[in-house]
Image (tube, rainbow, N blue to C red; front, side, top):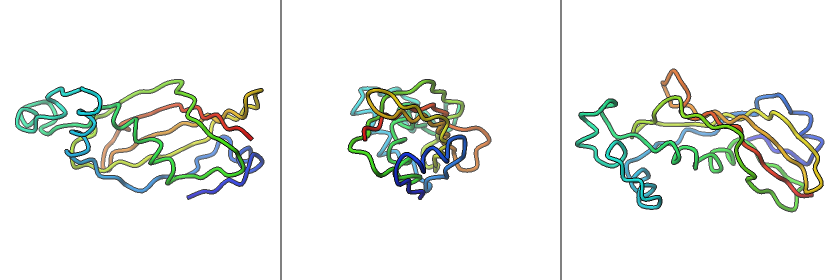
Length: 150
């Protein structure tokens, strides 16, 4: 994990790849819990019998489930200190190029792309790429925006 002690250290890393999270297994229990929380019970996610006959041969994680794991995966990549508060401000662009099959493992890599001082704080933009172990395409590519208040 990379620890940043304030703004100067963050600025020095803009344009660089920070690192990767640990691998996380995507279980059917996690997929089912996400389906319950969101009401998205599409068979490709929650019906292993029907999914076995589908295009992937198994259930797959919801794209938004994988996206929702960015904060936990990101916390394994880096820690930013020296700010009173940090919030997820949003996303500029998100794509889901590849599925995440049940039982597979994912990890996130982070590249810091820009840092801007604003009247409300410091905006940090990052490119986060979620890989599926053994996959040839990423599962998620997201441009994230974080607002930090000194």
